[in-house]
Length: 132
Image 1 (tube, rainbow, N blue to C red):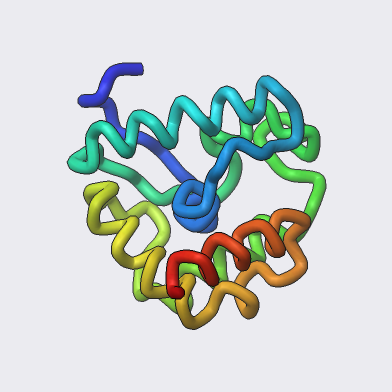
Image 2: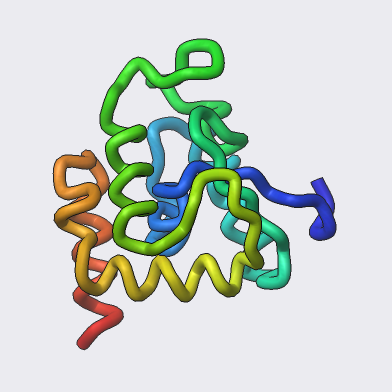
């Protein structure tokens, strides 16, 4: 995938990418996430389309079953992100703009949106570090 292709992401993956520091479910999942994060860091003008359901970051997730997730949590996280950010499903925007919205959302609503995620404590610690 080159820097000119649109990246399709679940809304909550904007938060995941904002806080990503190399942790993941498996080596394959972590490598995939690291590649996406690097691409967006290097190309903040990359267009991102927000989808409902599995995206390319879900490819190596142990909770993925076909094109869906066996857990109800990701859909709830997506809904929370959309509600608190003013974004809409199927909306396309630049990563720089999505990142800005995720920063603002994370500062106020991180616990509310994804407080029961297994990665929440890591993201909260990064958020606290960013705000100090």
